[in-house]
Amino acid sequence: MESLVNIFWLGVKELRSLRSDTVMVLFVVYAFTSAIYTQATGTSSEINNASIGFVDEDGSSLSGKIVEAFYPPRFKKPVLIRADEVDDAMDSGRLMFVVDIPPQYEQRLRAGRSAEIMVNIDATAMLQASIGAGYIQNIITDQVSEFLSRSDPNFRYPVRLVTRREFNPNGDTSWFNSIVALINQITLLTTVLTGAALIREREHGTIEHLLVMPLTAFEIAMAKIWANALVILVAVTASLILIVRLILQVPVAGSPWLFMTGVVLYLFFATALGVFLGTIARTMAQFALLIILLLIVLQLLSGGQTPIESQPPALQKLTFFLPSRHFVSFSQAIIYRGAGIEAVWPNFLMVALIGAGCFVYALNRFRASISLSR
Image (cartoon, rainbow, N blue to C red; front, side, top):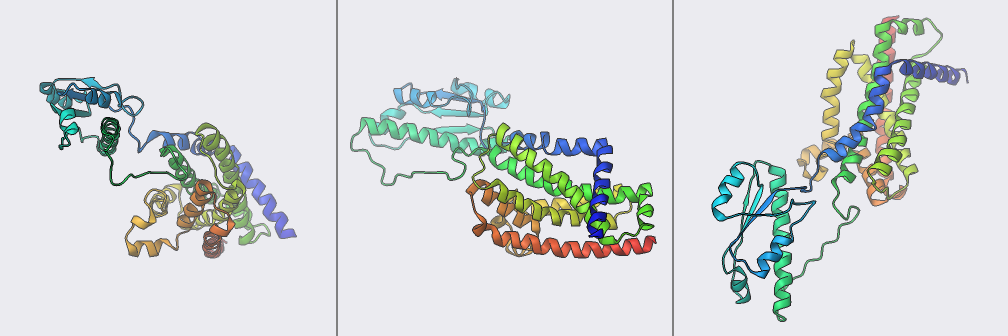
């Protein structure tokens, strides 16, 4: 009982110390608000306001329907240009796409003959160019199919594909990016807060005050773990409700309580990792370098940015032992697909086991560093 009391009051001391660190408090607030919103909306895998021009050499009703099918917000209002203006328009960057509809295009289609449309693309904007080409092809194909089906009652495609998107019907990138950003901030901020608290006490000399008290290494480490984990847990809850659900309008299909339970398990690992790095680094500069070296790897291999299935087979086996992979897996399953505990318990178990092992190792390192300080 006395040990629990010591852990509680030491944790309260950590919270007071964090409250007095204005820069760190502002950093936590920024990381779980503006940073998440910016990452969710700053990049997009959808095409948006792309400039497009048409060289309509056919002048038919079909070519007119094709031109009218392109409108905001995916594309800007189409611009009609002459064939001799294409090079200048694309060289100057005024148009990203130029669609050339050849003469007698509608007539050839009505006669059952093949006809081609040329699409000129400015590929310097690689992401927009590749995605926009697919949009243009689908829009033109739909318009031509609709036109021919009205003009020729016998016209039929041998196969009709019907696409239905699960979990993200409109393909909104912000739905995906917001959760990935939240997961990345949890890993980064938890490790930074815990490790920085340990290094700050060493630099300020307050660790010596703790060493002369009747405290164990377990009590000191657990106090830092629960105090910093509590701060992150409150920040995650507020960010999930205010930023993800209210502002970005991302629906949470599963149980928020189940997700927060998984967050608590992962925080146990992340705080233990912060304690471990805090025992290795002697200054904040060294700690920052370790953070860059380790956390970037954890985030890249977690499956948040690059799917695990797209990674080399040998690397996939290695990532199985990374808690960040299991954290990303059950977070996406709960939030996007509405998975229950029966689907995510293996991931919960792996995070708990790896977190426990990391905590034991970090505690031994911390105990050894205290022994040297004594």
